[in-house]
Length: 326
Image (cartoon, rainbow, N blue to C red):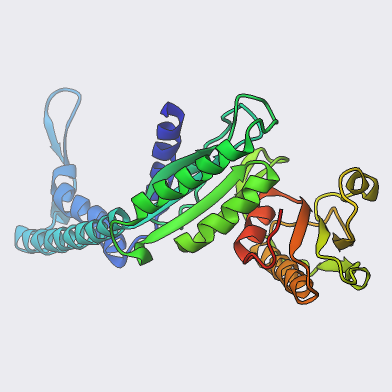
């Protein structure tokens, strides 16, 4: 909590220092040196010599008082008006910020380490009060899911917390931010569950940078290669193997399943997936294949998905239960 507070204070200070200023700030800043010059000029032409005697310098260059004071009053009035306008602008922005809510859903489930909080990494352009909601799917077994049914209750509990935070106020003032390090099945389920809760901004943990990161990279245009649709025939259950970060190997599938296998594979598993546009396109491909499987009479999909957390979450958001995935 202390670290989150320090991070928040530092980000707010940087945001304040580099905030976009209105015209009133520039005008007020311009009035300051003028007022200093007008008020200080006549005083500056006199100074006390080392012997204590008063020496007058350039008194003929002093600004006449009948010019000086009207100018002081004029620029002081402009300065005061600009300060008032700036205060009103700040009050409006603060009111808008207080009205808007940013509900930050952070999923934890793979490691016991708490790591860097997602709340502190939310981009400054997402305006609103940060409300952190922790979806803790850890069962005190590092990297191991002990009781899946218990975790289903935890996901539902997190959903109810989000609904509780979001129900007060206009839905247009609520933004959801998701980021997590959770097991693939529960990440997919989270995408299905939270998709109906409103507008969602998805972030992910960059293992190279060791920091939370937005999905703001360029779409490189790479898409899935689809294989195995023609081998289904009349099968009611199929395995859908989605290889994004690494290859889902056939020998590993054979140890558990004996159903036909349909594959969605990236031609370049090392390609970047830090693009929301690319993830949306891949999720659409995934959903279209699911619809084709349903049209062929498939009733159950055994989903094997090797991909980064944000991609799995977005796949869950796009999936509409056609047919049921296990």
